[in-house]
Length: 338
Ligand code: SF4
Image (tube, rainbow, N blue to C red; front, side):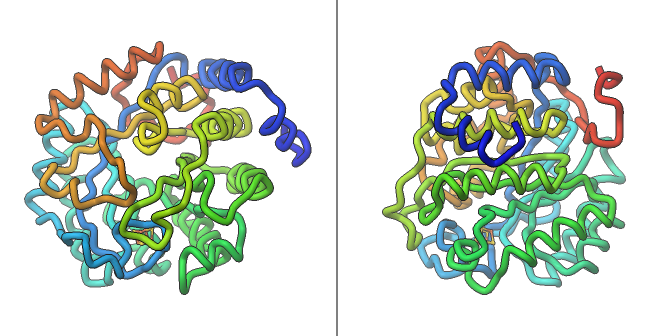
């Protein structure tokens, strides 16, 4: 299923159940029933950009801004390690250079103290900044392209361009990062062709990790009245992502739960092999509202309790949590991994 017309046909005509089963089968061939877990620390909600769909955009005066202290980040990572989590994702809005330098020191300290992988998700930086953070010890980088439609990209992400974004993805690869990217399904202004092109771009980028999630309107943004896609098209899209990218790591993200009460479980039944656990202290996490309805087990105060809920959810999907660094399979023979 690689041509444009075959993807179109699958999105329009394939029964959802059938395509989810195919995606699960493909996932099981490579990963068995093991689901990797990554802990996310949303360490700052400051951002210099103004993306129209994002709740922490610079122009949103209703959001209480925060930045976690170095000791707080370190403490939360320590707790994640105690729970056997082997990858932490450090995420924020786009930061100023001074903050990047500070973050590099934190990355160095974490890598020097624990045996885990660090993924960064900090948006567009200069090549020098990406290089600096890699040298500090960062292993992976997430940079979603959001939409493959250049005009829509420029409209929704003022003063940025898709070309620049893609260039940054290739720069990250060149610097030796494991790289993740993906889109937002059903962005206002997108259509079926956008989805098809998004799938083709994901495939073309040969990604180590692929993050896809539905558009969820956020009340303090210009797109507050936009409509989310339905769960069926979202799951079909995710299933196709798996079928087109058999060995990439693909999470079932919390945004799926905003569409359906069992959204993430359904995501795990549509080819996803990763879950993300928000380990940000709740006093900060409540202000990282990139979209509304960010409800979830993340609001359990105690991380151990959160982990129990996560384990239950994964088992309900017919899988098992797997505590491993979960490196990219790109450079390895996936059949030899487990
Ligand atoms: S999507 Fe990212 S870059 Fe855009 S406003 Fe939100 S945090 Fe900032």
